[in-house]
Image (cartoon, rainbow, N blue to C red; front, side):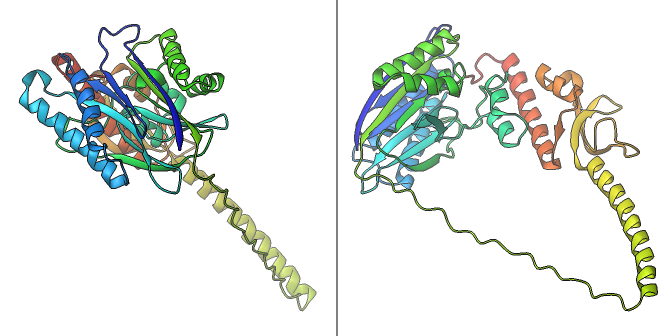
Length: 385
């Protein structure tokens, strides 16, 4: 593959220090977004980039090798935080792309946290990585839409980051690429300020990779620039072979078989059967209607306050439906005055869920939000994005 790339980083319009780090070379591209006080975020992101870069000098050939390199970077950051108290709790997100040598034009994408890698192909923008964040879990559960997640007040809470624990789970994805593809790696300073539709528009308006990276950062700053923004743009100019579109698998359609009932032997018998059939059908319709109403009334779940003003999960419909009243599915000890404002609003408005497991997931996320809020107010050294 022949590649051309451009990269840039900017402190933004609000922050005083840039804790992002990046690397762009022939076969390796990295963006890391550091977090932590006392310059520790800057140290963590730089250490992540340096460790992966050093381990990839001879090339990256497999997902296992790429994952191990990122794990080594995690260990290096974690160890450094133990050795220096001023760097305690430092961490970083990371997204990286490695070009894999071989007959197929292929890349590997590694990801920890909410820095992203995109593919821009034929005017369409697709995410190649998956965010490890509080709001992405809500999106996965169907509680939030991607649009709501973009502006959620807790969108910067990551559920996975490098350097926080001794080991970390690393996602590694394999993707085939072709001539004309454009790949974008970026920190969340871009995606928090610029919707995907606008990112796609900028990508389509600029042909030069370096100009494109700089234009994306300018748009992020124009939209507020509340965080550091780092962008790496990689253009696939040539590849060894064009991917071949595989034909769609043939499908077979089942032909329904209709069996006719035998004719009645006598007119009288046919009449009696008709009456019995009428009442049987009517009874079945009534029972089915009641069953359907009951299933509908009991199929949903919602969150609200019980008589003691504690948070509870209810099965049923808010306010009840006909003669079916909601019942308590899960009782908690969470009081209303413990809840952050955005979650308090969700509970007061009886946010609904499609399953009990989805509601349980939301309860666990409430616990995370409460712990996060309490930690933020009691210490100034808490890790924050």
